[in-house]
Image (cartoon, rainbow, N blue to C red; front, side, top):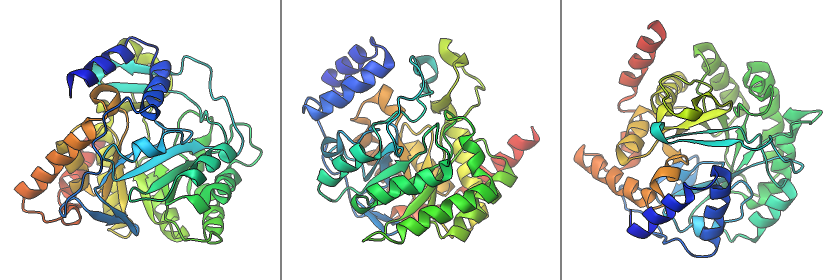
Length: 362
């Protein structure tokens, strides 16, 4: 991290977290943030669900909710970007304060509640963004007061789909009441059928993923996997934020909402490995949760992830963290004799699954 970036982060951390979040996006758009450009190599290049990626590290949904900084984010070094979540109609989300830094834990708690400007505004920005080497996807959400939340996901895809490289069905945010109930087998099967029906009418076929919670038990994971496979989904994103508060030390640890960042790493990686075991490689998995280093990105890949995403670590490490992670990831792949990311996927899955078994017994 350069001195300028360190000073910038220190200044942002003196502000309310949501205000700092907004200012970071404005700084990006104004060209005030040094950007690494594309980071790639033959070893880092990979393909996930038909998406050709310069590298396997993506930006998770939640940072650029309204797709206002697509052009500069495409120059940060990420292999792919996910924006949103978008709902059919604009909504304010939950009352502020709703974003909390847990600095001692290198973590974040949020209870935004799908605040966004709505599918129409977000689609207009996506339409203006020229398609390039960094695939752009949209996280699909549902309005809090919708009469048919399951149908909302398809409505957003119907609008935005022609301008996307992929879409992610988000049924795992803990901040919209009863949204996680849609992860149940019957509800998820019906919801996904509606989304896939819309996807199949788009002018260009795009991959559709579903994003799951890390708090699912073994039966819940099996149900999600079965529903995803039956629907013809292209992959699963594992995982969203957690409701767990185990081992936290920060003053804000009792705030309601989803926890992300460093404390989520082990839980989300165990969930990822178990899901990899259940699906037996039939679906690519995208690993999310607690990644802040090349070693952790590599661990997710070896646990079963074909690609990975991060967001919360940027709060503490800045955007220069992205090229640093990728440089370290390439070195680790080379050290262990892997010529590509794909060769490393799942090679340490069994150990993580054993850790899951020990955790459930203990």
